[in-house]
Amino acid sequence: MNQDDFKEISPNPQKGLYSPEHVISGIPIPKAKRVQLFGADEWEEFTEEWASSLENFYHCVKRFAGAGDKGLDVVGFIASSQFSDGWDNYQCKFYDKPLAPSDVWVELGKIIYFTHCGEYTSPRKYYFVAPKQIGTKLGKLLANAPKLKEELKYNWEKHCEDGITSTAKIKLEGELLTHLERFDFTIFDSVSLVRMIEQHASTPFHSVRFGGGLATRPEPEIPPEDTVSMDHRYVRQLLRVYAQSIGDNLKPPDLSLLEKDDGIRNNFRRQRERFYHAESLRNFSRDTVPPGVFEALLDDVFDGVVDICESKHDCGMDRLNATMSQAANVAVDASPLASVTRTRDKQGMCHQLVNDSRLNWGEHDE
Image (cartoon, rainbow, N blue to C red; front, side, top):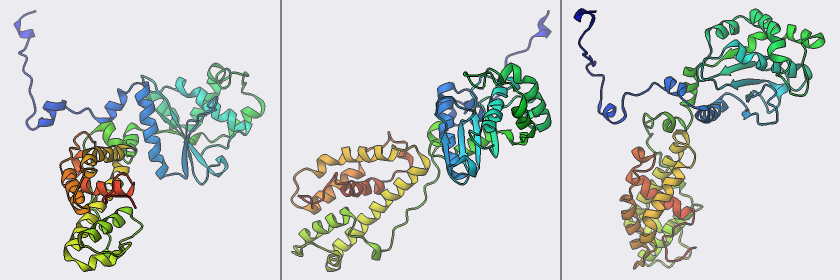
């Protein structure tokens, strides 16, 4: 061994590869690689989230939770909640290695046995889903239905006789063997991690599971003024505040009040726009973040304004204006929605809180 056997250590970073985010969080791990690092609990959570995306393709999606899985896991019902109207099965397996044939023989055996027993009809498709995906040998078998059938028959005694149910030894003979021979083995397939992640991206769980920021929020749509509804509590409360501000004694005040004063008409237009900005944020949150995130943000706004709103004010307009000013300054940095939450949203949430009877614009409730 001599000096020629060694070389200088000289890392060679690529120009333009790094960004300020890398200094804070490190080089991002590809999503598929991240899934492969999940533990059993994280995999369970991820598959539950992913399964919710399948609701876009089925009448309904259920996860089997009965005693003895009977070969079922995540089931997508095609036309109704009945097996007889068509269904697909997604068998989610957690292993620290790619799935091998020995990992799935008993699952195939369960489908053969329980369809033979009449527990359910044969599925349209049966997919294997696993964090380390499908190994080469199993992949080749899934692509070769006749070979898959023969290999299952060969491995039945070792893997299926005692594995299908704990109450009996299931021998492959007689009518069960005939059923297996007639069974359509082309239904068996797998779902790649890339496909899972694409489908998961359509759920509100994706942004908090993988990061990367929220999608662009669309501009709110404000309904025409002639669609104002007195069914909204915040509208009725605002009209009472306006009636008090101009000394109108009409009881109860109605929308005609807005034609009596340009100032209150403009104020009402602003408040209504704020309300619909908040409503658009609520709708946006349903598609982009997990349930409860918007409600938590609403609680933060409530906590930030309630003391000001419930303080003593000379009139309802003073209460309204003071609360709007306070809402604009409420910090929402702790919310996953912080990057898309605007001042108008926070002010509009105050009207949502009035609708929910958690705040009041007047001295007394209706």
